[in-house]
Length: 440
Image (cartoon, rainbow, N blue to C red; front, side):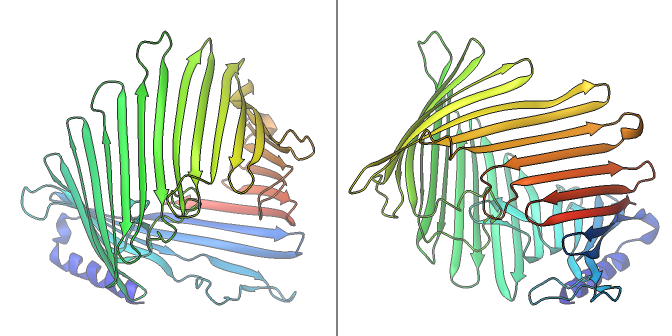
């Protein structure tokens, strides 16, 4: 409610302060609804999402946009007695409550000044994946402050009563670009990061990142170099890199989603090197790594070397590779991993029918019994009675924890705008659904 009050108050102030006759007001948004029936649980359910946009502008040299997004409305069968709102468990978002709301203005702060983007309400901040990439804060941000080659941004916000504020500066001069940011969280935590990339001479590229936390005295370091090897008859690219992340490095507002640069790296340090070239239609790469994983900065826990070869034949991408890994300790353990892959990118096999497919295999220590096979395929058809149908399938012999090993999906987009679908997998999902979506 406090969040909504801030937005409504700001909207009222803006409406009073600006000449209404000069404003071009438009309301837009997105509404979608989906009905589902799970055969495994023998229960129906439904979900509705709503997002509203209020655009006011341009007024002089500025444009104002207001956005409100709501939590999904969820309903399900209740004890076989018809549909009712799904009970809210502890920690679940409240259905229909405002999930995100903000006002955003693009324009100058003084007459004929440079245009900047100002946002009030729920913030979307992405200064650095190491220290700040979040939507959790509520407050005010200003971005796009430019002066010559320098661009800056600042923010001030709150999250569950904790104050956070920060700034970012980026600049590019000649062959060097620098991006630095700092975030203060509460009274004790200060996170900062700096990133630089340079091409000092033709054929050489360097980049480096340093991020740190003052309250834990932990840091993350990344450094990479890539160069074209001279005096060779082939174009060969040599690469080298170093990375180190302290075990305690965990800024409050770092990027947490899958693929972030911190998870799986805490407590580890490594040096990498590689060579890559292309010859007669084949892409060849050789890579090596020396690893330390006990948070002491020493590179004495593991080493690996691997090679990959790839090519394209008749529209198929073929890859093969082999990697040897050694774990250091009282006894050196050696493991081998062989990989094979074939992929067909989206291809029109018949008029208005597109097919894509891939197959990958990973064999540990030359064991056929332990080989992981992953096959994927999808078909999009826009032909006669098959118009608007998409079929997809997945088969994985050794899926990751919580992931399906077998999955099938069928979706049909009817000319009337209704989407019908069916999905099932070996995690007890066996569901039909129907949905509609409208943007206005």
